[in-house]
Picture 1 (tube, protein in one colour):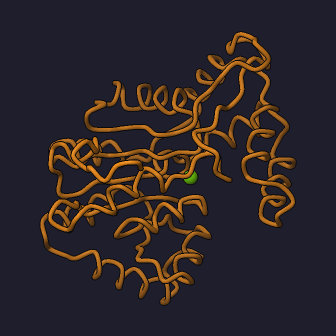
Picture 2: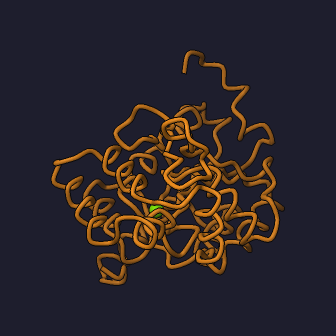
Length: 268
Ligand SMILES: [Mg+2]
């Protein structure tokens, strides 16, 4: 950020008490849309899992491996979106969270390694309407033509990364200016995620909702990051309401979260 002027930061214009940052795939949706495309319309699950392994062992970067994975998906882009609309589902309680957040001036910021047109297409289909852009923002990668072709022809599209980071989209960039606000202007910052790429972003917030049964929980434990475990968005909504109403502090939620994991209740 070239400037320390915070008055233009979009998500604090309505002076919210809380800003809710969240991952999309596997967090708001039940399945990961990029994995679905790769497994069903690209080079398949075996190669995808090998690619993930290569990233973990340092053989390839996430950025390159993810691009390769999506390059293997053959249909044109519009067809991919259509197939995803028919196969993806939102968490059954996300819509309730969305409505509550809208009524209570809690902006939702979706931070994703996926692509904006897929995410907005899925929201429109699965919520039954376009999300209100004043209330829900999508910050993600984009799509562009491959070799000058029409993106809606087979092999005609490729992912266009958001920034130069290892992950293609460094999710913490969007949060940092809010985390740096002076205490009297800084809302409570919450984050929900299910993957390791959510970790650096969540480190900027006050509390991470980490999805039950995922490795992310172990990382949080090791790093001493404040977190709590969620199974679906009904848990997230209940806890966010309590934080909003001052019934519970983020510190207490994190303390209870850690105790649950230590008692073996995190599905690991
Ligand atoms: Mg995810």
